[in-house]
Length: 149
Image (cartoon, rainbow, N blue to C red; front, top):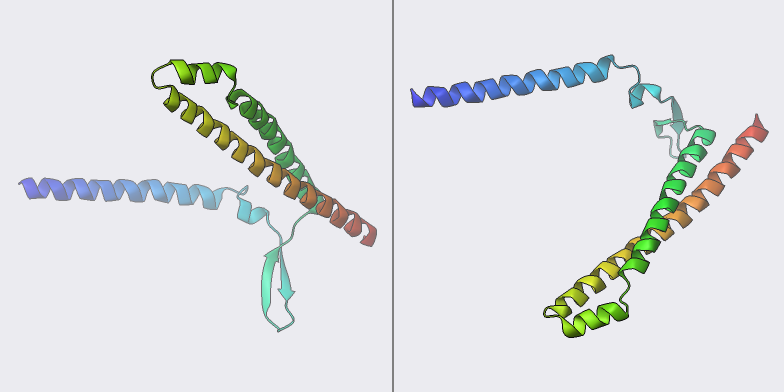
């Protein structure tokens, strides 16, 4: 009797998973706002004669999306700049390190937090520079496309 209960539990679990996954796929198939249906596909032919399809990209929407991402990264950059300043070791931290038991652990933790904040700031700054370059290229592309039309 014990073994039958295990089979019943497994069967119920499988049926439940099938029901849930079936609903998810049905919603995705019936939803006209899915990402796949919004794309317009264009056929391309390479130099070697290989044919393929790629989605077209609206340069203006791309530029707007890059601008939004860049603005978000600028906010993160400001936050990381504040974090770098807040985690910098100061005179008070030196006193705590020297006087308090476990002060070296405290100093190590502060130094680690400061280094992590500096690394995050450097990464975000690099990402902002890359997005700025991409934004300029996208705007250049959209102006070229506008001239061709």
